[in-house]
Image (cartoon, rainbow, N blue to C red; front, side, top):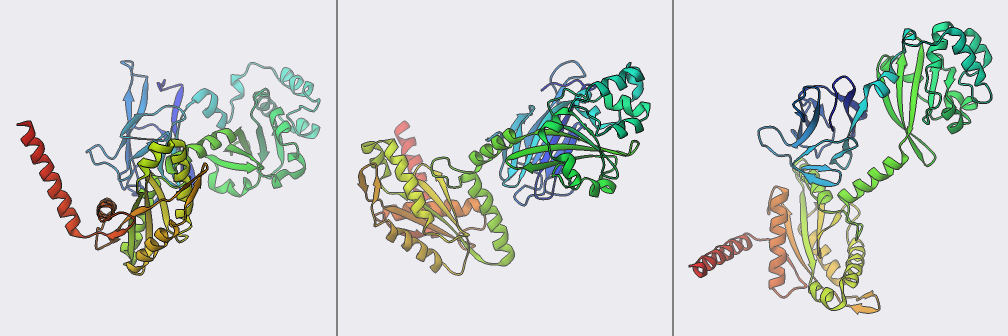
Amino acid sequence: MMDNLSSFRHILVIEDQKARRIVALEEASYSVGRESTNDIVIYEQVVSRRHATIVRVRLSPRLDTYSYRIIDGDLEGNRSTNGLLINGKLQQSHNLKHGDVVIFGPKAKVSYYIISTALDIDLFNPLDPEQFELGEETVIETMIADDNNNSTLINEESLQARDRNDLIRLASFPELSPNPIIEIDFTGNLTYLNPAARIKFQSIEQEKLKHPILAGLLSELHNIQGNLLLREVVIGSEIFEQYVHYLSEHQLIRSYWFDITARKQAEKKLEYRAFYDTLTDLPNRNYFDENLEIALVKAKNNNNLMAVVFLDLDCFKNINDSLGHKVGDQLLKSFAQRLSSCVRNNDIISRWGGDEFTLLLPQINSPEDTINLAQRILEDLKQPFEVAGHQLYVKTSIGIAIYPQDGEDGETLLKNADAALYRAKERGRNHYRFYSSTMTSKASLLLKLENLLYQALEE
């Protein structure tokens, strides 16, 4: 978390719909959002215009130690629409630590790293021969002695063609590094492989530029020259992160490889947990909210109707209490599967929590479409569920809110669909109800009466 200004560097690896790129944090603060006026732009539709702020924080009275903190929204107290999902948890602010992952949307995330300038950054710059004490003879002897299938030079001719500076530069490479290091010249010839690269990519000398780890590097020569290029390469079941530096002075392209398969698998699990319910495998509330916002934007632009549906299982608590939570969980999974068979391909089902589920119908021709859906669900539930040797008949209550007549924002539509759900329960359960404004009026009146009754009892 702490950092010495001269020894470490803070970086963000940003992955969104546009590209994958690196931002080195050097300023005192950064605005983050989808608008182009932000210091850091995230290209994802569900990201707020001013989604977050990153500020430098001193962690010690010493002037050379600091960290960065990410804050939801801007510094004026305006929060983002969807919040900050950091390492799988929604947070308003967070002191960033090495390896933290901030998810801004289904296709937008930022990873934070603290890297050693001496170890990592300098690797991407040409090495100065004067910093090494090795003499020319020692350098050459070292390289020739490593010729038993471990030589880092491609062939003997290339060894003879090297001048003293080149030999010292090559001898300075971390030969014992467990990570592959590869170098080609600007014409595409292999000029350097460390032992780890030879072991990991055994066919590279035969495939050369056709090998996945070298493919495309020359085509970026004029675009990236003088700058660091970071890309991911998938080879079979493995995923590698490749840091590439185009060295104009030496007419070389040098790349460093890191196996990030385990990290990507962990990130995939983390992202899954952030947007999916682990019991039913349905999307969760976070996923639903984000897609609801997207659907609203499209509905407004295209002037079409859409619907939000709330439903839950009638008397589910009785099943949990009498047969146990294990049976209850299995019933929820079976219910989710049956519910999925009732909707269209572009509709979204989510488990809202407990025995509550939500449906998003992003485009409907008329309210009649939601009636057909509700009737399909009620009809399908007439068939019992077979769970752990029990035959269970399940009923559901359904509440429906239509855009734009029942609300023009996500929060209002959800609230009104929920109100319609509870009106359906009042009318005997196993029914569907559309929202009407009288439901909200009644709910407000009941709340007012409850407060007055509580105050009277207190007095």
